[in-house]
Amino acid sequence: MQASGCCLVFFLLFSSSLVSFSFALSGVEVSNIARRQLLTFRDRDGNLPDYYEYTVYVPFTFPNSRLRKAYISLQALKNSIFSDPFNTTGNWVGENVCAYTGVFCAPALDDESLNVVAGLDINHADIAGHLPAELGLLGDLALFHINSNRFCGIIPKSFSKLRLLYELDVSNNRFVGPFPDVVLDIPELTYLDLRYNDFEGSLPPALFNKKLDALFLNDNRFTGTIPENLGIRPRSLITFANNKFSGCIPSSIGKMTDLNEIIFLNNAFSGCLPPEIGLLKNVTVLDLGSNSMTGILPNSLLSLTTVV
Ligand SMILES: *[C@@H]1O[C@H](CO)[C@@H](O)[C@H](O)[C@H]1NC(C)=O
Ligand SMILES: *[C@@H]1O[C@H](CO)[C@@H](O)[C@H](O)[C@H]1NC(C)=O
Image 1 (cartoon, helix red, strand yellow):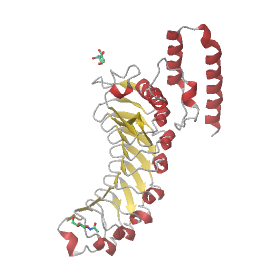
Image 2 (cartoon, rainbow, N blue to C red; image 1 turned 30 degrees about the vertical axis):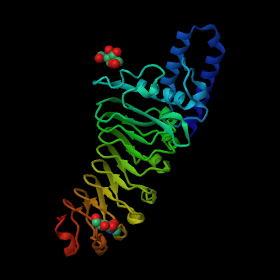
Image 3 (cartoon, helix red, strand yellow; image 1 turned 180 degrees about the horizontal axis):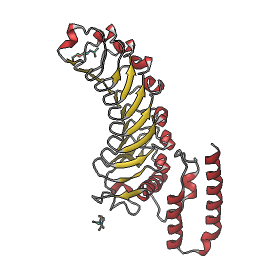
Image 4 (spheres, rainbow, N blue to C red; image 1 turned 90 degrees about the vertical axis):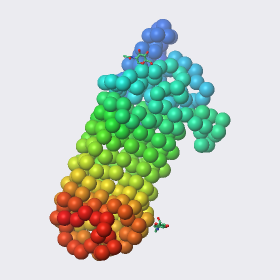
């Protein structure tokens, strides 16, 4: 908290000096400074102050203020990239953000007269970089897909500003650290894919209170037990495979009667298999392989199950 406070003071000093000197500078110089400012705004947890957009000079005009924010956000992302082998962001230049590769615009949900950035999809671009806090300015974003890239670091706290986001796919990247709690604050999230990263530590029980329909956690370094409220809400798919989870499978699993697929493969589960697992009437994949669980599986599930 203290560290981010210092950061903010420094940032305010920097931006006020930018305002007082800008009159003596040419447009090119100002845009260079703005660019440098985008590059230097960093908060360790990726918080973004609410007024941030007003402190950035942008040398273009836009059809609406949300596209201006999107421009600031996407340029910050571009400036956070160290390698872009397929030149995916090569055309991320100028004010027409809707023409950028991977950026999708649509009428705003709350005002059809405004065209806004509703999706970002740069799957399989093999980009190396990190996610800047400025992504929190994409307030109309519904889909954020960056699977199969080389993004590292953390999911910035500013993602909690993405009030419409319902699909977040950061799978197959190099994200690290504890479970990214910021996703708990994204209200509309229904599809969360964290597969194939290096997240570690235990899962927050609050994760299972969210109305997520699909939850992919496999191939990370998660540890600890599965929270008791696992089955508190209906879901279609959950995968815990290839982590280091241990203990029992919570009996609340039996409440997810709509569940299609649940995968526990290759963890360190050692406790019992709850009889409530027999209540999963609609499950088509139940994989318990490479663990050391004890218990009896109901005949109804035997045909579609791998058990060790
Ligand atoms: C990347 O794409 C931009 C815009 O399409 C183009 O101008 C540039 O020459 C490309 N760079 C490389 C290295 O291909
Ligand atoms: C189970 O699946 C069947 C057929 O796919 C479907 O009609 C039914 O509504 C499902 N039941 C539940 C509880 O999801």
